Length: 143
Image 1: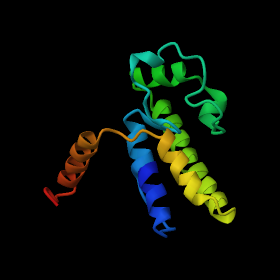
Image 2: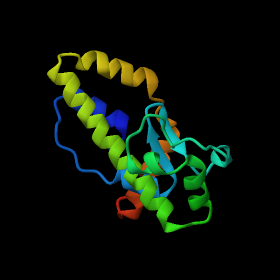
Image 3: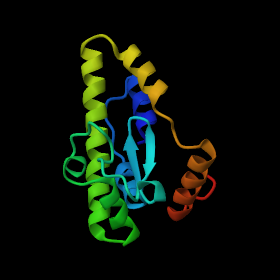
């Protein structure tokens, strides 16, 4: 369900997805951007008056600053979780729209390369630890 996984899945012909990752990581303050994940809880966002991601057309980015969303997370306000979820879901929808258009225009290979040039996935060790925690929570340790 991560953006990099979706791009690679589409490259392999998969066109149907169902995943809770965008909402689950949003609740923990992780937001998708074209460059990778943003940790909105980090102090670097405390005074950011711009949107979470420049050019994003989601309700969150059109209405609130990164500093305000940061404040909501630090204050543990439920609105922060909702705004982060809105952003992540719109990011995924836009990603799928862009890939669909690239396929229709015969430039998916180029789109894929540009995506990977710009997007920095989370550290592989962090991803592995997160997956193990999730598997354990599902009663399937070590799968």
